[in-house]
Length: 232
Image 1 (cartoon, rainbow, N blue to C red):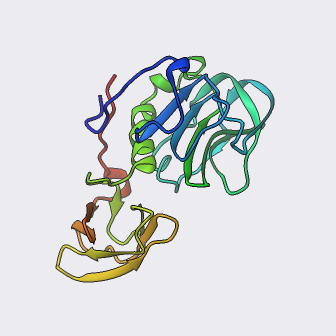
Image 2: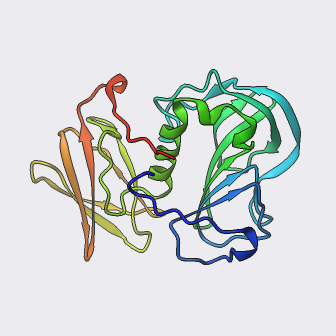
């Protein structure tokens, strides 16, 4: 298992909104409603979410994918094959991460203090779990849903890139200390900060009152980025 993960599997009837977990995964089960939090829906959704399921598509292959989003960058979905998937109308403000000719296959969305990843097909009805991209995708999904939180994200940000980081949404500003001791105060907007000055390799510290976190900047090229894989 991924070193960040403590996994608990429960039957649908034992689930209740508001449980104290970082990420909830609904695999083929659609709850009536969800509260605030981070969610992964695998061929599932909730009635109080804005995703509309409008039909079914079969024998699906990937048309294109988002090469810049933190969930899908550095990955290759060109050989992904899917037996069937939902046809959906993506919600306003969502990002299509992987798409077919007939519509989105994987979507990311943020709104109403929720962060949601939709995978609109059953994993077992695809060859996704057999592909090299799969464990990397899961690892990057965890980093997107629950970034930082006391864990370094080494190898995720290259020098010169803008770091879009999620922090405690109750904060108004965060102090960023670069590897050479330089300090900058950044405003928190919708629970995120944008660190544009990442010119130095090493660890950057984030501080605000009792809040502490960090992230790492690497000089590796895009092709040389290393990953931590989830292991079943």
